[in-house]
Length: 302
Image 1: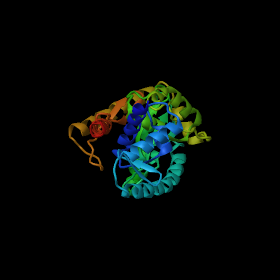
Image 2 (image 1 turned 180 degrees about the vertical axis):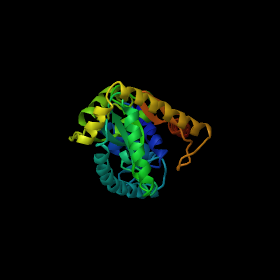
Image 3 (image 1 turned 90 degrees about the vertical axis):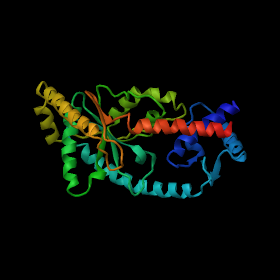
């Protein structure tokens, strides 16, 4: 049991070490891959620290003996809190667009982290079979934001619809992204989403998963009118048409090896019920780096 506990703790610290992010005791507990008592975790952390396997700075633990990581974390946490105020305000505005059923924050900001280059990543749930209409309307609005250099506040890069809310890729990366998702609007929608992704608890059995917001999305007459106008069957044909056009345009970007502002190859994974960053790009790189880091850690502490 002691060896298993040490292995689980090292796995958690190795994952967050990819982002140079020290963790508190209670944060390590949330991301463990096995059930463990609080006192057992404290004992395991104390032994790993005493053996020089991990390092403790105040109440934070890391694989690296670098106190500056804690200073950076606290700075980025403070910045994230300010950005979340903006994210809440923007999410209320975006929720007024047609077919939007739920809006949450994903990415680094959902983990309370933000630096000078951070943007606000939105996780958006749409009405069934209207994802591509909703996405197109939001991205047309985003083009206006470019005129005022506000595009970083509207990174709407992950869409699913209510028809198929289950995340297809199931691994530690997607489990952590699901567990740290920060719902802002759409209580019933996100309850359905979390129920549909209960598989993530197999990776994170100690995590309670995101609290569901109390507020629901309120309708308005413009939204109601557009949704009425685009009701079946015309809306179905339009949604399919927009999906094909968007997929074709993004396939061309990927084939041309275009990169985004962060230097990553541009790719969009598309389907009838989802539009999301291509898992073969960022997600795959994270998983490869994680496997490499685990090998390094276990060789060092074997």
